[in-house]
Image (cartoon, rainbow, N blue to C red):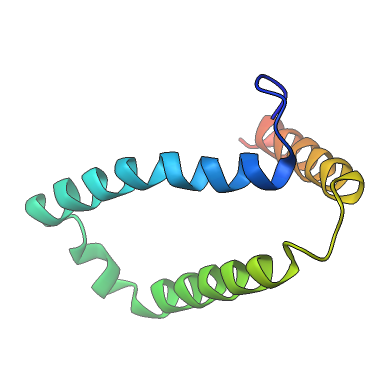
Length: 91
């Protein structure tokens, strides 16, 4: 967004698009070495995370055209700041 001067909605969409090949390669590699077996052992946690991810994606898609960039950019900055603080305090 800052580097190329695109609006936040375009930047977010492009970020997802760029991440897709990485996720597909990771999925293929983890599938081959059996790393997904841990998901079966933690099925409840896996289902809660999947449901939250789907709900967040649907809600975010529905709200995409509702909020202007002037609201989204500060909101994203606050979320990133809190995430950075939480990460820095993590032991």
